[in-house]
Every structure is written in structure tokens, then in C-alpha cells.
Length: 136
Image (tube, rainbow, N blue to C red; front, top):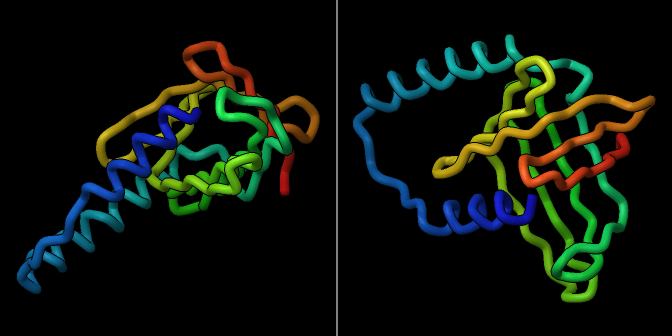
């Protein structure tokens, strides 16, 4: 989770904006609307909303990670490193496919297994890290 978060943060810092003609912006806006519609059709509605891990011990000390999954197929993730008093955040798009949760940022795609256990969201990353999130 932290590797993915760091890649998202670094990608956001390194990305730059370029000027576009009005026609190009219109085409891009239309493409984005089509993409959002397509992604929203493959999103499990149960995952939508805000989720938090509560305090967990990581390689960087105690931390709290919060996800927000939006119905337009976008997500944000924020990890608060408690001992360092620092927040790391990132955003991108997501989709679900069966028990797979696919998180995408400009330079990274991460696939995890997810399921619900009672009211909790369980995410198992490819390196076997298991996270229990509670609805916020």
C-alpha cells in the first residue's frame, strides 16, 4: 500500500500541465466522461464511500490510511504517519472485477483482492499484506 502511495505522490509531483486548444479540451472532456461512465459500470457499489484502517504498525511506525472511493470511479488515499506527523496522499481511478480491486494512477496500476467481512472491507495486496478497513 505504501509503495503504491509513494508512486502516486511522486507521479503527481512530476506531472506537468500543458496548454491545449479548445477543440482538444472538448475532445478530452468527452473522452473523460465516457471513461468515467465505463468505470462506474464496473464498480461494486458496496465499496463506495470513506474507509479507514485505524492505527496500524508499519515500517514507518504507526499510521492510519484512509480511502475514499467515489461513484465516478475515482479514489483518494491518505496515509498519516503518526510519529512523523506527516500526511502522504494520492489519487487516481479504480474499478472492481469480481474480487479484484484495481487502483490506477498515471504511472502505476495495482491489483489487490478484496472482500467484505461483516461491515469491514478487507484488502489483500499482492505481497500478502492484509488490511481491515472500517467505514468512516
